[in-house]
Image (cartoon, rainbow over all chains, first blue to last red; front, top):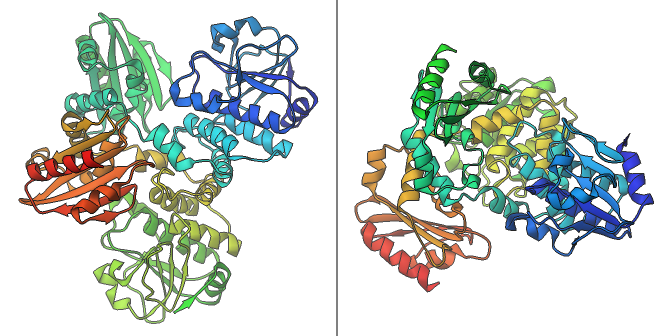
Length: 315
Length: 315
């Protein structure tokens, strides 16, 4: 496996042709946006380029691939993955391409090499930021469709610039997208200013039932499986729900317990700087980062909630 | 009144001294952040500069003015306002300075001139963006405290880059702040990822009680004064609450009715592009923009809700 610089990757893209671009399973805004932008950039260079249609793509992002896809890569195609950190991240439909992928473009730090060459920049918050750098390197025109695609990748992977991974380069990328026709306001409305009814209902339930203690600095919420079922939330509705209790004004560290099944509880802890979530999860054999950590507790939800509350008071 | 260019304003700042900076009433992140940044920039130029302490400042932004304030301007001071669009926007305590203000730096389009000279850029989403431009013009070092101040101004006035006023220049300003030590992640957590309990409770109540119709595209919620009182919400909790019902997935236009007092109802309408909020508020003698409009209805809350729902169905 050969590690490429930005320059060398640009040279590679100029030298080869017939590109087939691969995205990862459960595709998110970054893998879809980055693949769409790369495909458009390659076509501007006069290359033949397609994104191979990912069967798992959701309506939320499918419009980005319109006019860019084909069903299968041919044997003579130059295969490129974007935002794929390991072979396991490829959808089943793409496993047959393993062993013949020429280039991987990615921003994941803990990645497994599985391609002939790779451009990996772990300092980028999104793969889309690397695609933007490549575009600059290649002096390709920046059109509105490419700007939309790069903006979607950058904004979704940074949580609209709110996650800790956001850098000056993320804002530079967004500035370039906005200056070149990205529909920043409309995309933000669609991607970030929308909540499902299920999500809003479970948040309402959490507000009514969470326990706040130690002068409002600590919070704990235990969500019974029966409550999730009666509200009718989906896994999408529950995505990152553990970050919600921490957003209550004054709360510095919050524990969220979910009953995955009887006698099996998933603990997720979120903390602001100055607090250490891992200090809590370590007591239950879990791990993570200071700001976000987790553990699994093999006990009833009531027992788990009691144990976690006691442990929080001991911190 | 003399209109100044960016260049001329930079010259003005270099030529004069003993600056006293004024902010607006009910001070927000932009007036506080911009005044703090301007004061720091002037001090770096070797000038004597202070922000005149605004008695209405909240805890949320007071830290930005630490070490920069004095109580009163002296007669020989050069008075500068930031983010003040009209004399009426000055706090009562600053009214005595009217008539002796040398310069106004602002980004409000519909502004009233009331100073000897002014630099107004209505294309900027925040006054802080203009302060950033001035800093660039003056070739002043960009330190972390100034970066924090400019970031707070820019991010709060753009709703963390989600409002329609966000431009490429807003992102450029944020990029420069991030590159020069602004605590972007921490500030975002404090400013945007925090909700008061009162706010969360009223949102929960809205989710439970809002009526969604016309295939989920239209929504209406009528909030009785008694509900606000029983939850115990403050006006801060209710700030921009009318933008909340529109965030429910699928909702394109939402009407929020609040009972200001018996027989007096405030209607606020929010709509996504493609829908026109003013088409609805015009029926009740109100006005606004396509995306956000309002009206006052002199009738009971129940009657108002019925009238608005009927009007929405007629659109």
